[in-house]
Length: 86
Image 1 (cartoon, rainbow, N blue to C red):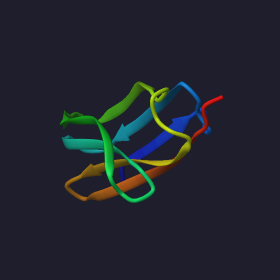
Image 2 (cartoon, helix red, strand yellow):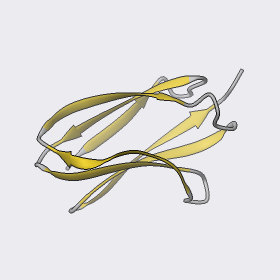
Image 3 (cartoon, rainbow, N blue to C red):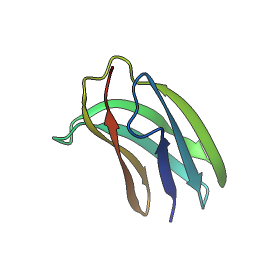
C-alpha cells in the first residue's frame, strides 16, 4: 500500500507532502475540500517505486480541512490536513 503524509499539520503558507510508491504505475494526488471537490491536482503521472517529496503553497487556500488523496490502480490513501492562515 502506498503512503502519504503532510507536515506541518496544521499548515499556514506551505506544506510538505511526502509519499511513498510501492509499485510502478500512474499516481494521482489531489487536494480535496471537505465536500470532496478537487481544489488542486498535484501529481498525475507514472512513478517508479520510491519516496517523493513536494512543497505545496497553500497560502491561497481558505482556513479549512483538506484531504490530500493519493490514488493508484489499487485504491486510495488519504491524509487529512488543516489549513489555518495566521
